[in-house]
Length: 611
Image 1 (tube, rainbow, N blue to C red):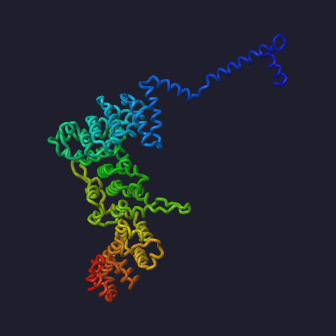
Image 2 (image 1 turned 180 degrees about the vertical axis):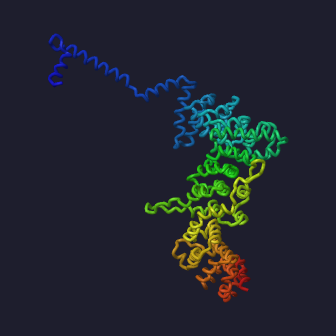
């Protein structure tokens, strides 16, 4: 439309009888302004402010609204970290005056529960006892609070801050007696049960723990001599019916807990572990299908580790693959964990599919990326960290040791109780092993993936290995499995540098020689003794040929004398060593007879060999 025509059309709106109606135009302008003012009034409050206003109005109709509002202001001051003890005491007196007689009702409110929590945290022992007594004045009140989403935090605070008061502990335990099996499978109250068993002494919680095994054992057992377990209760059961009832009761709790994914709770892991210790292997296999996907949570404790190890032992090949999948990315951290490594060792020990173990477990160690040195970060070697670890090194020792007796000497009795038994299960009325592959075949197949990496590790980090107790054990096993001149020379390099008189001048701290070190001298001695019993003696030959008369310097200390004495047992170097020490016989004899200068057993052993 042309511009002139548009202008004419607009003007017609205000024409009346051929003239502009200015009064109508003014009226339209006034109406528009009134509408704008109404909109401003409607939007004077933002949406969030309107919500706050509605919430405040709604809260004002609740019980103890004014008290709660005032208590929340005091709570805000009470939690300030800069408060002096006197400030805290004054504020607590005001809070107690406000909430006295209303503690339970206030604790159940989502925004006021924090006030009661703060009163328990910052109050004195007498004030805490007063709060607890008021809460317990009504029957089952603590149980109700434990089940409430907001009030259960009050229970947690009571358990934490009343743990040192014996009278308060008795009140808490008494109020929860008879309710533990229900609370343990409740979505909220389970946190209270966990806190009870983590923070309170086992002697105090023993009556509560007894409830996990069924009403017969909790109602009719008057005194407990120690911490009860499922096995101890089964041993005291008088009839088979009682035993079956206890197993079924525990199994019911476990099934409900598994449905709600309570695997991360320590008390639940303990119940699971007690169950697998006494359950039939077929029952463990049935349970394993539900447990194995949550292995990473269970490995946080010793009890959980026993559960995963049992599932690996009695589970199906499919269950073992699912455990591997669950632990993907956690192989190194699991092997370095004080408990979790055992489950991983058991999994490797019983899995027939060695290719799967290589891809999911061993390959994760071998292919772990090293830190970028260009960015100024220290290099990280997963193999070295594991080899020097007391737990991680046991993976290598288990695969390197050639027979069961020499393998198990590296494990303590508890570890052997998990790793030694051959898992058997009934199939078609017959006991059959859960693993079909021969142990030695499995060991060789797995070691094939690690042999080159282990030899390279010992060559490149020989110094770290000989000075570390776990590392020295691994070094000896690598040397005995894959003896070579290259590896022997790498270890001799460490021995030679240790005898260098300038080594302490170059370093800021004075360190013991390898042959004086408590661990180092034993590492070298054990390698020599292995040479004495084997056909090849790469290390002993290289040590004597390289050091020559410097071997006399080895015997300058009592520990070093033990190392020198062991050289006489190696047939290939015995003659050379005798010739070197013949001229020093009197000096060594004098040291062996000297008194007050320290141990002399090493010199005596060396003198005996020279003679």
